[in-house]
Image 1 (cartoon, rainbow, N blue to C red):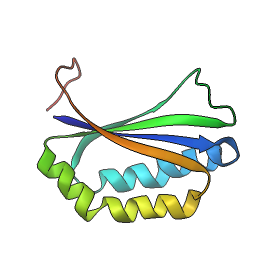
Image 2: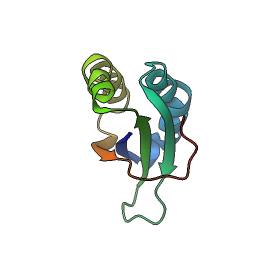
Image 3: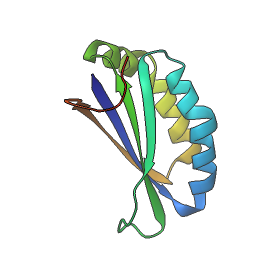
Length: 107
């Protein structure tokens, strides 16, 4: 299993709209691809970026083949929607991690 992690720093003036859009539109759209097992959205506490909030979205994916499929078939359009809606209001970076151990129930 892999974790596809997206970290987003979002300006405070766009924060509330962004959070609602992520929860009501973007995250459901990502999960609707059928390529991820689950997701987790987290907010960083105590960071040093005044005027912004920082979130991570962690998507659990079975293998690199499914992640590549997501990146090729779905990510460009989903990322474009995010960029068009919040251009100049955010910064994002993506990482991929191998899940070594977990006490979460995985099927």
